[in-house]
Length: 248
Image (spheres, one colour):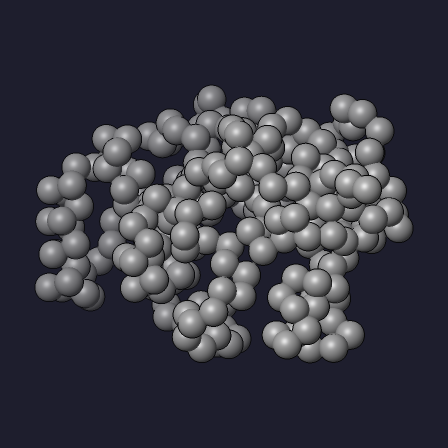
């Protein structure tokens, strides 16, 4: 992972934000909504377990957009820029750059629209009702785009087994928290079935459907006793490719 991601207790980054609200400002709800609509219209749904009418959906959006796409946009930011912006501002930047890169809107058109709404914040937003897309969004929110898949092989690990977290080559995107690399833990739960991430992560090794485990770690084993509350257990859901048998 790049510098600004999956930090897991890196020191001297300032106080932790404990804001309990999911959306602090109203505009954040709209950004979340845009992302949700893009997911519901994404071409990757053609291969989802639920059957969606993606090819016949009356939309101009003809690209793949998943959670991995959203995270890649944020992870592509310059590290010092990353720390300057709020959570949903990062979403907005990633989504905006995606639309520019894919040719849905030019950078000049985006700048003009931004200037327009800054000057007239009460100006009406475009409104083009589309019943088919609305139905697709509701259906997607109810059924999602994932689910249990057949196991490609029996799980390699079992509940109660001690494991060590792998330390794979760095990738542009990973589902392995950096602070767990090389740490030892205990398998708490072996989830039924197999799960597949949206994209291959290359040298990180995450590709195809595989078992997923809930692994328990003692906080002191991760951050040391001086930085951990006593009797604290950390749980992480990890893909099988990230686990290995401890070396003797």
